[in-house]
Image (cartoon, rainbow, N blue to C red; front, top):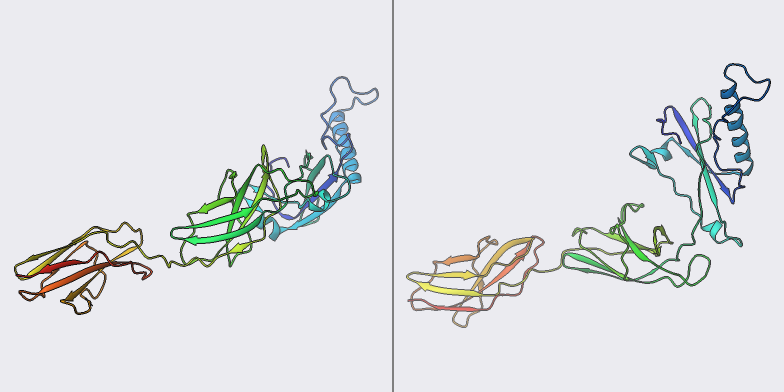
Length: 327
């Protein structure tokens, strides 16, 4: 395209040529320089010659090209990224053919609502590479604060030859959505495992993995079969590592080491007297890492423990027990 804004557009037509002839280099040959041919000295003759060359080039292109898609307005909107329309052409049928194409050429025509067609865009050409086949996801493991994805490398490329892999990109989508967005890792990872630390509790993420070619990270292979997980917060916080019970006149002062948990809701204190079972002292989790028990009787022996609770209601193991004998 020439970069002009698309206005009053009804559709975009995508054209592809497989192994184009050498003449299809550009749809707009440069204007011939030097003197005009004899008998063509009228004003505007250079413009007419250029227009004629463009028409000839377009005719030659359409003679070899095949229209691979027509994008209506809704499809254009779905594929618009800022000022750019992104179209992906699945090449697997071509790559799996008996003869691998050595060159592909693409061009676009815009069609206005009244049916007026634009001139052919510039012709973009490239040599297709054969991407790797799909990896095989073997395990998606939810852990506290992360999800671990592991996979096996592809054995072959799309032509059945032994696959050569440069790295992998991992993709994630919510279960409720159909499309994947940008990969979680911009740079391909070399190994066959990835740790996703950005997934949120309470979601159901779905993952796939694509292998890339060595030295060509933009060439990605077939995606692995998807694997999803119900990522719930079932991971309790750590237990308070230390608890001190300090008896004073008419009370017992409790102090413990704070627990470093990003979703910590607070602490719950338990007390047992003598050999009796412990009972809960704090109705709701408390935020501070200390507590004063002023409901004690003199000359009694009390046992204390503290547990940490997170916002999902997960409860830690109890702290070490602390004993206090009141005055």
